[in-house]
Length: 180
Image 1 (spheres, rainbow, N blue to C red):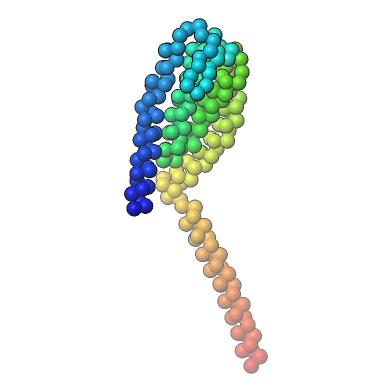
Image 2 (cartoon, one colour):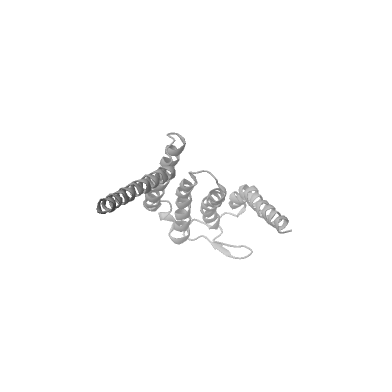
């Protein structure tokens, strides 16, 4: 019963995800249906103003060209099972910073200084991905398994400790046999 409910929930979630992906082209090109020259557009739950752009249609164009790829990249990041999925964070950060700057600043400053933020994100993500790649490369190409090497080193240390312990016991045994 519980397993059936989990399968049902998974299918519903995947269906919603597929629906959102399927309607992204419609959402992406929806700016074309906004009349030219309008300063404000009243939508169902909010109002959209020109926000420093030429008109509300141009503002919507900038928002959607940042938001739609951002949503698709987030879906890809969440559902990706490859070892390199962390690199998807770089274009996610790029679109996120661009979207933020198009909302927060004047239209003359859009898509200019985001590279500085993206470089900082890249400087964190690239070493992490490279470290993962090295570990995988060593394990699967060179056959080097660090966990098994650590286990072998631990066994060798324990053997060495046991050998020293045995030598101490033999010395005690020899000293006791000399006393007798």
